[in-house]
Length: 156
Image (tube, rainbow, N blue to C red; front, side, top):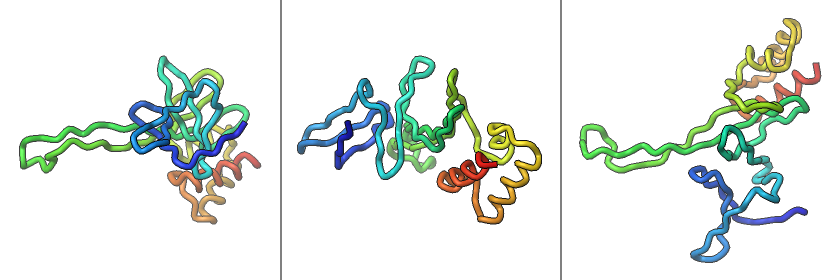
């Protein structure tokens, strides 16, 4: 079944999806019966690994692996010292890239070298991928451009 909800947010601190349904009420979604969330054409899934549940954005999904983008929030504490220029606490959102295969989820830095190794490309395949990225002005750091590079490299 599919459900359409107009106001869904990701709570990065608790790694859950929430929806405001009354003036003063929030509903927390449980992943027990939910496979994925699609928000603004971005697919999010929950994975349990190393004793923790985390929500990841699916960047690229292939049969052998998935490229994921994980989000988290860190608290930067304020200081009473006026010379530090941080009077109040604030939350800072950070993200990182990960590779998920059948066994594990591990950190991944999207670069030409790492994409070449991930896909098992030979020298000519790596050169074609680099030429494609350069000819189209694509960056390995931009998510949408990285998707295009991966789709091209998988077709080699």
